[in-house]
Image 1 (cartoon, rainbow, N blue to C red):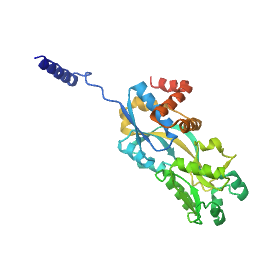
Image 2: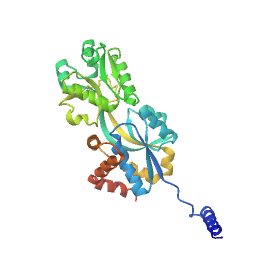
Image 3: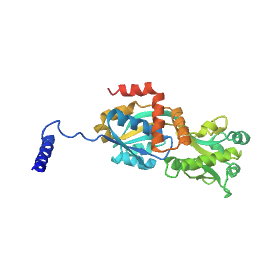
Image 4: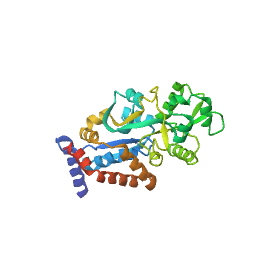
Length: 308
């Protein structure tokens, strides 16, 4: 009899929760971030992740995807937030998914990216712009594997920059003189540093922000090759957060909070250095984000004030 009474009470609670307005169980508030394989993206994810969880009661998760897969995921609603959108580098993808995604914020601006060489190489051989690469003798100098073709240390093959580099080499008319060496970011960085330490000629692609510049500043140790033909779209990208349009409509307060978030290339560099030294476990990444938030508490408070 006791068990029957308990069953009837539970059934009554269920009926009331459906029948009486305001008694229904609250819908779960959830956000799925995409991570594109770059260390610099971690701070951009963990700061809003913490704020959504602790200020607005969200549960969150992080999906490990490539850039292209991240766009596809937020485009079809399999993920909600992509915090590492580089424009104009991702312009084609943003246009492809324009009907189902929306820009939430300009996270940080002025991210120089393109081709670089050691300063001594630039001075000794007069290489200051991308068009200077159109010289077979110059190309041979960058041949690191003995195949008589210049090597350009580039991007992870699944990143959009890899395709963009090949496109720029073709538009420069030097794709028969050079080939891009693809690889994981950490391996490419190690290879560049190896050449720099040995004072060997090296041609490479990099971007700001990046920990590389902490030891090899632009203008002092390396030279950015100017882009007279504007094949890089002017030389610098801005980094944005994009979201699935339906998620924004269903989560207006969360979307508005994320719209407030701003960082700088200095912030991203700092976080990358900390990750290099301390590791990238979820616990460490969260701690680094919390340290950054504490150091920028007034700014964080202003973000929260905007949604109250």
